[in-house]
Length: 251
Image 1: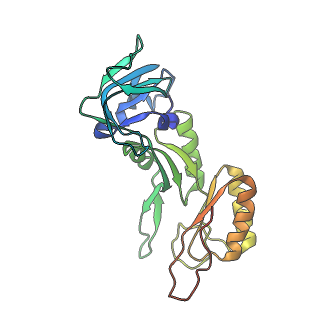
Image 2: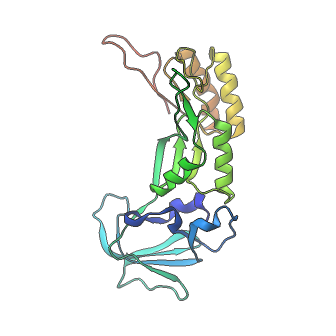
Image 3: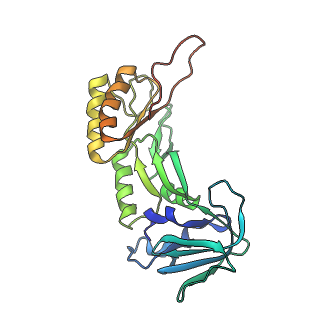
């Protein structure tokens, strides 16, 4: 399987390492190959405790069968027949969980610029850290380098980088008001419409309204997003009692 489809498999949560992925027989680039320790078309994870994400109690002594990167069977180890030729991994003492789907993530971290608060892209370490933490699908809810995020998304899909499957959010939709050098700003709904259209055409699948955006800005972005079946979210700042926020989050 590619790393972008790994969300369909289970994660050994108690021993997760970047180098412990289960991958189907497939060609990967030299940049990714060193991180693949299992590369078999059929894999059996045996004797594991399984938390399936449905809310039911953890099930002990389970076997999970993976074929071509997809789960095809889960059941008690005593009852599940391991296919001939499968790579068998004994997961005794380990717990398997589904890959985590995270909806408010970023590929940047704080990086002061002199006396100003600022943020900087972390294109190499953050995708790896998300995957190492069990996140196999993420949405970048606000971008400062969307062109970089989109490139990382592509490179992961092509098997050239390791990281989770990504839904990329466009640059923040923010009116001037915060002295953060890396933060994208717009001036009015016309610029909001133009920015939303540009980044939707580039492949972004959601938009993040920020603290000083107006209702008119929000309406402009929603007008672009919703006909394309894209999502709009945002950060609202609490105001004193009796006052209404300028706008509210919408999906």
